[in-house]
Length: 74
Image 1 (cartoon, rainbow, N blue to C red):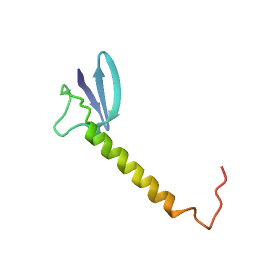
Image 2: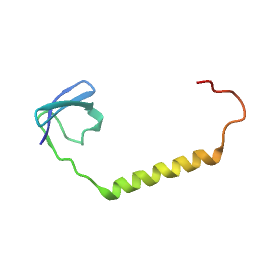
Image 3: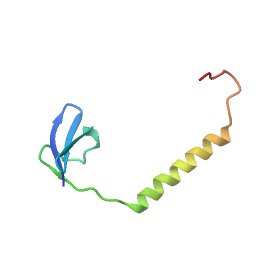
Image 4: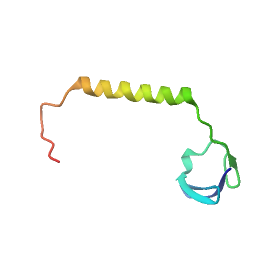
């Protein structure tokens, strides 16, 4: 069970099986607040969509090639 323990400014503290985890309060679903019980679901379709979008972004970046000007020193 995931419970919103408290919200401290922009941080939501969740309690998951006795352990607390801090997340951005913006990541909470609309209407969730202190004491709310959250459900976590795995959406395989959404997971595939996100992976496909990441691959497309990577391909777009690869197709641009390196910039001709400037030098990046690591």
